[in-house]
Image (cartoon, rainbow, N blue to C red):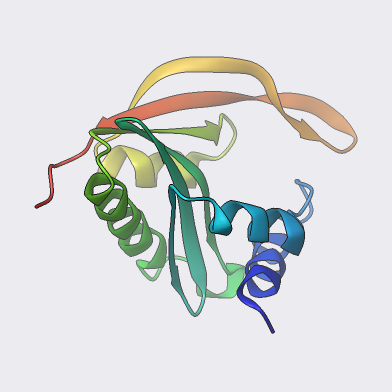
Amino acid sequence: MSVPETLARLHARAFAPTARGWSAAEFAYLIDAPHCCLCREDHGFALSRVIADEAELLMLATDPDHRRKGIAARLLAEVERAAALQGASRQFLEVAADNPAAQSLYTKAGYAQVGRRAGYYARSGTTPIDALVLSKALEPVS
């Protein structure tokens, strides 16, 4: 199985049934982009994009059967370092307002809320959920 296919399957498992899974083609496009940072383990991955001196965490996913084992925290730290190596001094991300586990992970990693996007996450059969916009200064890497 190709890397994009593996990421698409893991993404579908990680976010079912609340979100539309990203396709292998979408992952292929992103990971082939020149400023993409992909960090992965057997049961999770983190994907960010660097533009100028800012990074955006596009996705952090962990297999539901392997959560609460430190995978997400390791991947987050790894993708932050990869983004810093590409010149990013700050990373941004969005997290669903109804996802306290992810919010806790990001808070522990040093992220702080800098904004809110009303109705950002569409959910099947329910009202859209707000996204909290978080940001963190990245440590310079040499």
